Length: 297
Image (cartoon, rainbow, N blue to C red; front, side):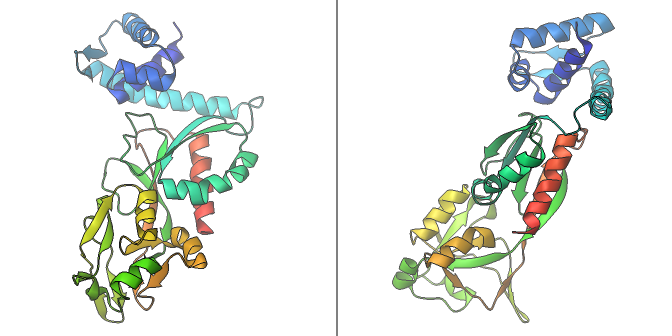
């Protein structure tokens, strides 16, 4: 039995709560993972996991080993990276997830620079706005905008994204040009809503001593950033956008900025990761690179 592989398999089963999901993320067969755990239990002469038909639960001995195993695996990674004969650059697969517009418009175009710096990192990129189970899906880190709602994760704030309010010329021609955010409550106007933000804008708007919180009526609510933008470009309603998403469409006249004398609080952008995992070098350099990249956006 390779004790290193056995510990890795054990940690993944605990985190995933399933032999099948652990095997998938480790690129092993389920039988191999099962055999490694059985051999580990036989060597230690303790039961580490309780198996049921629906769930795998860790025993008290298993919980104690899990905490120690995290430190052991992290220490092994650091030892390997620090050996004089080891590769100087971080390497291995890195699994990240981020909103699809951020991936398409900012991160992917800049990846040649990242891979020039770190040619031995293989990036497995998920581009979606869905809520990712970081631990269960064995994702190293996720990038998300807005306020973090999962207090169980560690996070680093890497940017504050400027926001604006926009509408397509076709929308303005049909519904008229609003001069005050309060007009979005009128029957003539509609907004496009993003699902996590409720039915309106998630941030207050300010002008001098005046504030406005828009909760207009929507014709569409979506949980995908690309669909949200497409709805605004199609004239379905007024939308708020980070500057990086709006800028190219404002330049072509496909979107018109609204309420330019009003200020919207910026959207925080976070990189979140499991708090009990050692941050490997490949994760650390990716987080630093993202922070550097977003500073120029």
